[in-house]
Amino acid sequence: MGPLNGYTVIELAGIGPAPMGGMLLADMGAEVIRVDRAGGADPKLTERVSGRGKKSIVINLKDSAGVETLLRMVENADVLIDPFRPGVCEKLGIGPEVCLARNPKLVFARMTGWGQEGPLARAAGHDINYISLTGALYAVGPGEGRPTPPLNLIGDMGGGGMLLVQGVLAALLEASNSGQGQAIDVAMVDGAAQLMWMFHSFQAMGAWNADAREANLLDGGAHFYGTYECSDGEYVAIGSIEPQFYALLLEKAGLSPEEFGDQNNQARWPALREKLAAVFRAKTRDEWCALMEGTDVCFAPVLRFTEAPEHPANVARETYIDVEGVVQPAPAPRFARTPSTVRHGVRGAGEDTDSILTAMGFAEQEIQQLKAGGSVA
Image (cartoon, rainbow, N blue to C red; front, side):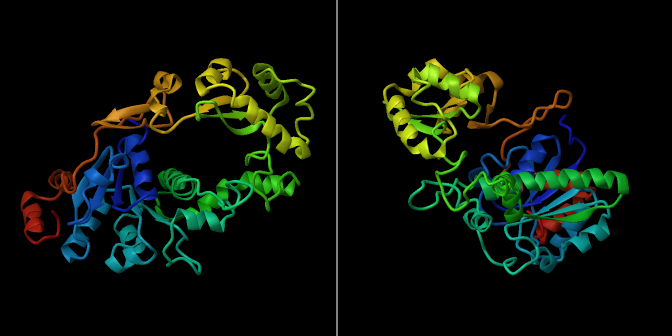
């Protein structure tokens, strides 16, 4: 029974950050009902992780009876997640005004890349575009050559899915006091911009060069904050920023404090990075782990995500779980009194149609009529 037990979330099926947000809410105990499209991709193939804990109903939202079915469900829901481009829900007849008229306490969370307004609002885009516009992509990668896309973690997931959940939880709290719901404009470009707050601060302090990569404290420019190749071709990561951690790095690596002194002299960083690279190439990743892991060097092996579930620290914390044969991250954060759980794996499209509608107050005859007319499946 997670902290959101008793809340009902309707998630219109989409991709990327919206399903992630629904997954996190389901992990925390909300009943999340995914509205799938008839003839769409099989969620058991496309939503192997993000579909966990959710129920599925198939509704034809291009059919008037299907639209009315969704609106009746909205009357019994707390949240609706809209993953579509601006204007799509309005065109279908399920926009915020219509839904809030049915349920004034509803939180209508709209997840887009560029936001509901502005010159790019209706343009297509992906994570790489949103993080480009915020400066995040420019800042990541080698000093020479192209910026490196950091997977789709910054725009889609951190700037999208996480921001969606933050907005939903805040709006639910406010609605519990005011009795009024509202629409939330969650834009990945806004979230990515927020994730860059520290670098705006560093720039204002004169402590960052926004025109360069691998030239700053946290972008691989500093020899004491970066990754190094080992003799076996694997990598380790160090983050020995504080002087006492840096001193311990030198001690564990058998380096001379005199040779590696003047830690924050940026002019020396490239030469010291080359020297440190030669040192790390002298041992395997496992040998460095034996020397440094668990110390205040601020050290970790660079693991593939398929290796991560087997690391002793992750095993001890049960950071990963197996759900119906799929290894995946466990629910987080961890609540002491109302722990999050994964109640079940991915449901097939429409697998819960009958039980959902029954729980929402639809009579058996109504359900059969909706099925016969193709409004639900």
